[in-house]
Image (cartoon, rainbow, N blue to C red; front, side, top):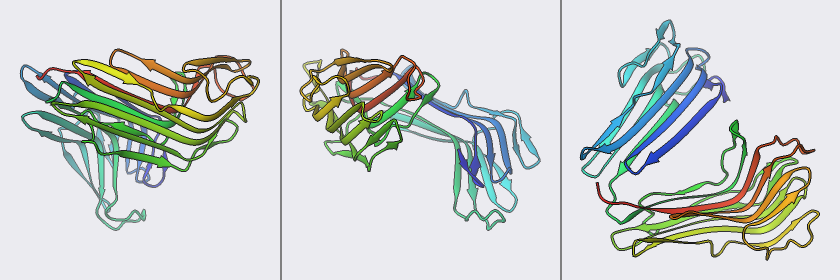
Length: 341
C-alpha cells in the first residue's frame, strides 16, 4: 500500500477461520511507515480469537506481534498492554494494541487494532485533524444460535488467484450473516472491471438474503454480471447469473442452484457450447488449461455456483502464471446445524 504521507507498507496478509465453538481473525502488515516515518515497524500483527468453552465465552488477543516498532525515538520490541496510549508531538496520539470487547449472555466479540493513530492537531504534514489510521485490524465473535442451524454465504463478481502467492479482492462482494438478514436484502454493485488482455466486464451486482429463526432457516445469495470478455474473446458471455439457495427441513439441509444461467455464452474453438450447456460443463483449452461453465460444488450442508472458472495449468501467451484460477459470477450458501451451547 502506498498512501504517503499517511501510510506506506509492504506485504499485507489477512486470514480468518472458525469452528462451531471458536473464531479467529488475523491481520499482518510488513514494513510499516506511517506519517512520513514518525511510526515505523518491521512487522505489525493483530490476532483476535473468541471461543466458547466450559459454559462461558472467552476472548483473547494472544498471538499479536510488534517487531521493531519505533515511534519517534521510542522502540517497542514486544506487544504492550492493551490500549497503550503514546503521544505524537505535533500530530496527536496513537493507541497500541487497542482492544475493544463486548459480551452478553449469548454472544461475545473482540476487535484488535495493533496501531490506531488519531490526528488531533494541525501539523506540518498537511494531514487534517480528525484523520485516523488503523494498521493491522482483526475481529472475531461468536453468537449462540437460537435456531437449529446457522447460515453462511457470499457472492461476488470476479476473483483471480495465483496459487498460494496472490489473491485479488473479490468484486462487488456481499456476505450472508450467520443469523441471516431478517428477510432483508443486502446488496453490492460496481460498474465493472477492466484488466486489459485478461478480463473486461459490464455491471456487477451481488445480493444476499436469509432468515434464521426457531421455525425457519434458509438463505439465498446471487450474483449477476451484464457482460464478460475473458482473455481477449476466448470466452464471451452476457447476462450471467449465479444463485445458491439453502434451507433446513426436518434437520436436513437442502440445496439448489435454480436460477443460475447465461443469456449467451461462447468459447473460441468450441462452437457447440451455448447458453444451454449443462451444469458442470468442462472444456480443455489448448495452451491455457481447463474451463468450467456453470460449475456446481455441493457438500452435505452447502452449495457453491461458479458460472465461469478458468484454471491455468499450461504455459500460455496471455502471461498467466500456472496455477492461476479466475472465477466469474460466484454464489455460495450453507447451513451449519447446531445445538445450543
